[in-house]
Each structure stands twice: as C-alpha cells, then as structure tokens.
Length: 312
Ligand code: HEM
Image 1: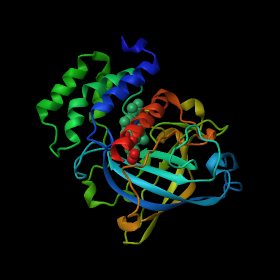
Image 2 (image 1 turned 90 degrees about the vertical axis):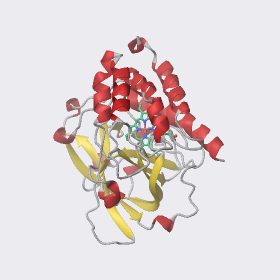
Image 3 (image 1 turned 180 degrees about the horizontal axis):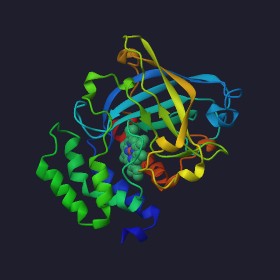
C-alpha cells in the first residue's frame, strides 16, 4: 500500500511520472506560459503597523527587481477552464537560502495559483493520481483538444480503481481558478494564493496572497498588493490539509506592493523557459510547511535540471 511508502520513494515516483510528460525543454506542469514581466517588489515598513510580520524578506523596507511568469496549469488555450499560475522571482539581498537557485544565489521565489487550496492532502494519493493522468497530461503538452468525456471518465475510473484516491480525483477535476475565459482579462486582474502554508519566522504558518488589480486603464505599470494570510489562531489550521481554505479563519495583511511592467515586450532578453522557480528558494524564515511542500523541493529541482539541459 502506498500509505506505507516513505516520502522519498513517493517523490521518486512523482519525478518519474513527470519526466514522462513534458515535450522537450518544457515544464511537465504549467507548461504554457501566459506572459512574463519585469516587476519591482516593494517591501513595506511594518515596524509601526505589524512588527511581528517584519521577518525574513519582510524585515526591512526595500525595493527589489523581480520577474513574473504567468502560466496555465494544463491547457494550451488560456480560454479553457484551468488553474492559473503566477511564479515570482525576486532578486533579493544575499543571504542563506533553504535551496539556492543555481542561476541567482540571491533569488527568493513565490509560487502561487488562482485558487486558495490544493486538491490533495496526501502525498501517496497525489502520486497515484499524478501517475494515472500521465497519458492525458502528455497529450495536453502538444494539443489544444479538451479531454473527451470518455477519456476523462477513463482517467477517473482508473483512479477510482485505487478507491481512496477518489476525493483527490474529484477535487482535481474541480481544481480551477478564474471562470471567465482568461483571454478576456489580464492576468493581474486575478487573485492568487500560495495554496500551501509557509512558516513566517516565529509566528507560525501563513499563506501568501496577491490581490487582484483593480485598475482598468491600460497603464504601463500596474500595482498589486502582496499579502500575508495569517490565521487568527494557528490552532484553526492544519499544515497537512492544504485542501482547506483559510479564508474564514485568517486576516490579510499587505506587506509589499508588486509593481508589474505590463508591456509583455518589457523583457525581450528574458529566457522564461530557462527560469527555475522553486518554493524552497527562500530564506529559513520562510520555510515551506507540510508534506506536499516538502515533496516539491526535489521534484521541481530535478525537473528544472532536466529542462535546462534540454533547453540549452
Ligand atoms: C506534490 C505537490 C506538487 C507537485 C509534485 C508539483 C509538480 C510540479 C511540476 C513538476 C512543475 C513543473 C516544474 C518544472 O519543470 O520546472 C510544477 C510547476 C508549478 N506548480 Fe506545482 N506541484 C505541486 C504542488 C503545487 C502547489 C501546491 C502549487 C500552488 C501554488 C503549485 C503551483 C505550480 C506553479 C504555479 C508552477 C509553474 C511554475 C513556473 O512558472 O515555473 N504546485 N509543479
């Protein structure tokens, strides 16, 4: 039974499954990028407003250059129902990292989606669902076709075959963000969440949230609020249950502003397919929490190595 498998064995199975999916030089998941942009990440002065949050990257007010990669979870066509990603790489001050980006030792990354939960709470179940869906995800890498009803049903039945993954499979099929065709809205008009929890220094688990941009004009720079989602009582949340929303048991505090250069041509020299984002590219004060986050460290790192070799 998978339940008894050690996390390391599950992580190796996840890597094996995701090695089979991608077209050469592409990501296995979130392969289709939805624009990349240069940005400035401006950390607010928190000492007077909320000094407990002034830890790690948020310890001192400062401005850092950043890049953003927007993505679709699985679809090539952004108008199709999907989860949408927003990965941010901040060129921060030098310092210790839990995992160092080999391309930029100063990098601090935040990886978010336009849903505030993840579909799975269990790495064993995630592994099975991921393995079952390899053929469908492979096809999504090169084709715009939607899954046919029968293919989706076949995938589900294959997954149900291992009965206890049923919850994950059903949540996965509902794992979608913005409901409107996304081509009608700019990516910064969506709200994003880290979905999984992170430790913030000594205050315990938090999530990150980026609020939707309200501006409607075609400005050359738009600003969005980067917030910490802090549970009123840490006992109300379980770091091993990322499929639960914290919205009813937490407060949002804006700790930074992200100023995004809207012109997609603002970063012509940026090789976005080469960039490697990893939630572990962070100082120790921002440690990713829970088994789902733990797995992402080696999975993203190993697959980024492979992708960069193929893409070179
Ligand atoms: C066990 C859990 C997870 C696994 C195994 C996993 C796996 C992956 C893989 C294989 C990639 C492509 C990496 C690459 O080739 O560079 C990826 C990218 C991504 N994942 Fe996950 N993922 C997990 C959980 C999550 C969660 C909880 C989120 C929520 C924020 C998330 C959001 C993203 C995003 C936004 C990207 C695209 C990053 C980019 O633009 O490079 N993933 N994931």
